[in-house]
Image (cartoon, rainbow, N blue to C red):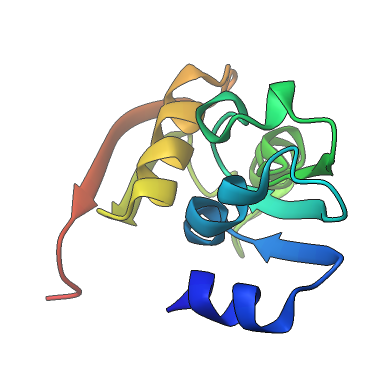
Length: 124
């Protein structure tokens, strides 16, 4: 449906936001007369072929983990003591959150520690 809409409008610019949008936008890699601007890709650009496409530019979505760590270290409870040092990450099972989970697991959290990370299929 998205491909049909793009074809019917015949744009000169496609702005593709988030990972799922890239599934359609990548079909226009190196197509003359069309530029692609991507935003919010959690993973790498290579699976979309953007690394080899001359008509593509954009920005990746990356969590500011250094800032998150600094904020968590600085937070204090009413007693003035740190809120905690052991972190648990909880996310959904979407492809983009699974990529975030991998990034969180590789990050160096010291002096905190990421003790576990779980991805669940439903809110319940």
